[in-house]
Length: 294
Image (cartoon, rainbow, N blue to C red):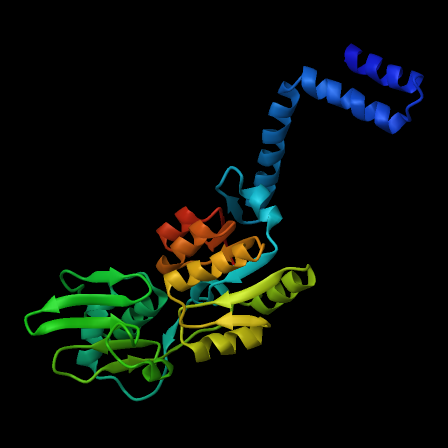
């Protein structure tokens, strides 16, 4: 403190203004007593993260606040992130109970919102659903299991071997050996505050995008309702990684917000990342912060 005072007085004496003199005095204090900063920075981090925790946001990464503060672009997943994720099987051509039960034996092994919605629909019909043996899940594609008659699959149109034009017909497809493919369509609602949040982010100067693996039509409808100027549907995990890399190459620092298994690579790649508390474990692990509630 004495050295800092001498420095301040000396610079004033040689004709410097009080601001330069104070700056030099502070520099002396920092150099001679770095422990003050070593204590101050963690104290500020603890205070900030505690306040966020009180508001329902858990910051997990030690440098998460710094990286969150630097972002200029925010990329949202749709199902379970921008929307509630409380999907319901859409009323349409009736699906036979035996077909729904078979598809649900695959779906019950997955935490994907579509799979969970399919299981709920089966249980609402009073069907008994037991997980099939040897179910394999491929992120961004679907589920499969071997049977004595061949492989049965549940997932995207491409995963079950259908042409691209079938993507718009259903969100989820089920195929079994010797039978015609069966499509399932679902209904989902935006989170109650989604429209206001996107409007607030745009007003604050952030660029916002919607990037989802869902059908293009469903993604477009959600994007237009929420006010996204840019959106993309049918995005696989590698597509999301490619888009984040594009933004990085363009000089943008992107925040990725997602909840699904197929979002985990993108969450780990973004400059910063955020997940809802309803996200799968791997996504919460990859994210810098987790938010609760809406």
